[in-house]
Each structure stands twice: as C-alpha cells, then as structure tokens.
Image (cartoon, rainbow, N blue to C red; front, side, top):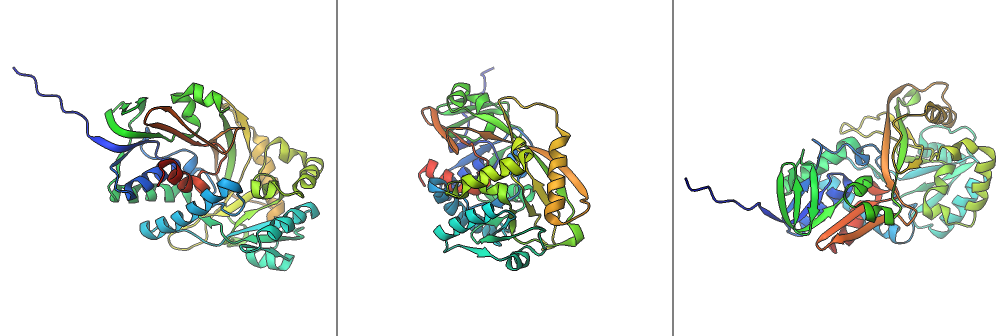
Length: 379
C-alpha cells in the first residue's frame, strides 16, 4: 500500500507562545496588520499574572520610554474595550497621602505633569474616594489611569481576537522553539516569526538569556475582600508605598525623604516589599464589586511553595487602618508571580533568527504590553 503523503503543517506569519496579556498584545497588533496569527498556550486558558493582578492600567506613574508605551497601551485598551465589549473604567487613580513626605512627592510630581493630574485637599480626596481615609493629609488624582477586571477581561480579549481570525491552540505545551518552527505536544507549527511571551518562564526556554538579564521570579500575595459598608470606589487607589514603586514618582527629588521616613516608621512594609494599593472589581452590570487588596513582593530564582501568614496579616492590618474598618471579610487569596530583572522593565531579545523573547520584567504588563508589542513588531 502506498503511504499517504505527508501534509506539511499550516504556516503562519506569526506564532505567539503564551496567551497572557503580552502574548495577546502581539496577536492584537499582528492580526490588525493583516497577518495570519496563531497563539499557543499550555493551559486551557490563561491562568498566570495576567489574571491575578489589580486590573489597573497605571499609565500616569510611568517614566521615559515606559510612559510612551503606557500612553499607547491606554489608547489600545479603550479601543479593545469598545470593540470587544470589555468594561474599561476611565476613573483615574486617587493617591492617599498620610505623611508630609508623601505630599511633597505628589506636589513635585503634579508640578511637573499638571496637565493630567491635580492635587487634592482631604475633602476633595474623600469625594473622589467615596470614603474618608483616616489620617489623610491630602492626595492627588491621576486622570489617565484605567481599570479593567482582569479575570474576565483577558479571556474576553482572547475571544475577541479569535473572532478576528487569530487561531488559538490551548493545551499545546511548547517543547522547542526554532527559527521557523514551534514544536508542541499537539504537533508542529510553522511560522515566519515566533514571539515567546511566557513571562517568568522565559528561563525554561532560554536559560542563558534569562541568566544574562538577571531574571528572577517576584512572588506576590493578594487578597479579595468585601467592600466595607458597601462603599463604591471608582478610581484605583495608591498610598505612600506606591510613590516609591513607580518611576514617575520615585525619580522625584522628594522621594528620598519619603524612602527614609517609611524605612524608619514602617519597616515591615519594606521587609515584605509592600505596595499598599487597591482596586474594586468591575462588572458588566455596573454593580460595585469586591476590593482587590495588595500586594507584597518577594524575589527568588525558584519560588518557595510555602506562604508566610505574616504577609497576609500585615496587608489586612494596613487595609483596616486605611479604610477605617474594624473588620474585613476576606473572600479569596492568591499568589501572583511575574518576572523581575535589575536590568530594566523589559527583556526583549532574539535568541535565534526569527524568534523574539519578550518578557515584562517589572510587573507592568497590563499597563504597557499593548505599547511594547507594537514596538517589538514595528507596527
């Protein structure tokens, strides 16, 4: 019997490994450019950092090239929201200042970017927040920031891309990446260009590249709780710790005094790498949802499987004070993990011809991936 002829695999213009926000961002720009795109994902759906975050599109607090990517990403999110029916809240961010040093950072920052940001008195801050934050000396409103509900927005974004012609192959574990071919457990995929967007797992594919860039895993703790007294908080909410985490604030001259004050007055926050911030879940019905509280930051090449209860207790104590609540009803807790590198906010490298490894190594994938991907693809 004559053997059946071997049918070569279908060829794509772009194959994307990873269905998180970085992978979807590349697929978004590629398909709109008329390219044939396939997305390969090892799980049944995205379960990583892209759905475990605040859903906060933190445009305003970025700096330099990252700020440019964030501005582009903001416009893309608004377009995606309108096209795909994904709720995107444009209520900005309210920053609560409870120390004079925090107010000084905000005054300097707003003085440099007054077009999109305003300082707030305590009364104005309470009006923006929808509640009185005990001990607030004032604050600021950052108008450009957006908010989505990540656990629903990411799968809705993927479904929208599928409707535009992007082929998704879930449960396809990638075994090898070559210049014109991706080998998976579900068969080979031929592509002119391969984008490997697997976040902290970049070291599983390109260990030498990850080591060269000093990539480690940042482990987070996050908590979801009922909004006390049924409050509705439209903006995202930052506190003084946020002013040391985002470069737009951290690069101010006033930031050093704040760093000293926090180290002196609240050393546990630094010990657990706390960025005390929260957002409120969005829903299609418009009803106010639970609060997403966080987060801690611990860094290591290999994650420990054990959770330290002290991190959660610290977060809950801080939020009870911030919200003026005697008790918080916790509904869910989880671990987030993302790539981190001391060499900069992004790893973008070509380990082989036609192959680009792309990882956001700073925890700002939701904020900047849609801008970064346009740059990587030159679109």
